[in-house]
Image (cartoon, rainbow, N blue to C red; front, side, top):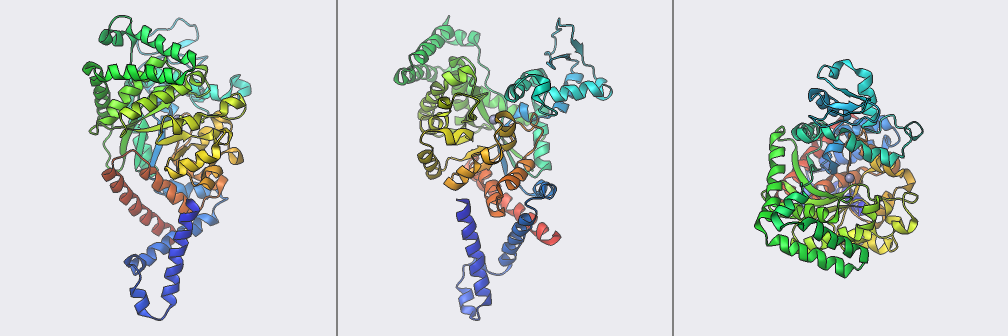
Length: 509
Ligand SMILES: [Zn+2]
């Protein structure tokens, strides 16, 4: 797909060049309007920008400068709490005078006084006075200075643990967290964020109150028994009957609408900046009890179905190789299948294939992306790193291309969590197969990265051309879950910004 576009682009430039040199003006006037006058200069800027990018392909620091300035469209795969830098959590924890376990780095929620002798209370004036404590906590809450030999923990575990360590500083400060993402986006010329903000809250007590005594335990057991049977028809029919009952309960369905309103109010309480558009994805954690997963997904679908809300789709998150994630995987895909049938217009992006050889048994690498695409009918795939290990990957890739199912590529994340980078990464496979791609950050805070760096890695490692890079930026708007009007507006804005950027590059260099 990328090479195809590139060829078309070169073809257009070629036709233009040929006609400029031809003597007959009649021939020129036969050309479509876009190939005349001022537009020729525009194409020239893009071509010059492409040449410049080619000339700096192996010069990392020049690439950093280039991509800091380049308009990037959207970041479609980012988790709010993982995207905020540890410095912000340190400041919040000090302002809130939270206790921290100085050994593990775990923060305790407000009002909790831990009994461990290693706990100390952070105070507002520590923000500027306890430098080494701050340094140590930042290292524990992120991948900075991580070496497995001195932490005695695998990289992926260190990564996923971090959420639990700083988590107590996140909950009451969502607007502060959203502000950081918005400011960073504007700073690095990103026009749109699709954020996994916070998941719908679901509790056993509340569900029992709505559906009757012992409801949660008995229905959850029904699901667990079905999972145990490994009979997909049975699992599907259990999910189906649960969802049907929920659909008929107005108290429950209002919870979905209320979740959408909650997300809207969180967004409204953050800074207003016309330079950045934000939307949100609801999600469930794959490690939860199956009934909790289904309840969160259902709430997410109801909220996304309400087109007035900023919740525009549903996802499923958390480490894919955990025991529950693995053994409930097909059930989760069936949940999406049932909900998608009920709400065909609701968009879904699914983390799938965030796995690699060595992390799980080889036979367990087969099928996660396949199931997300064919069973869950995902509109986008997050990561897709394990594609080469899936049994029918060739036909799967073909299907993804033909049905325009893009993959959200997260290079730094894959490198740290899975140890997959350079030629081990499936990006060239996807490019060759013509599967649409977007580039995203995943957890920029924990990973100490940003979107510009992801573009640097793309060019540095895979030598993508400027037209290919531009296509990725366009894809990040085109494959977003915005409605068509908003999509078109942002796409036009992106094109305008590209014009300004290319003109500047062409003039400067
Ligand atoms: Zn993710």
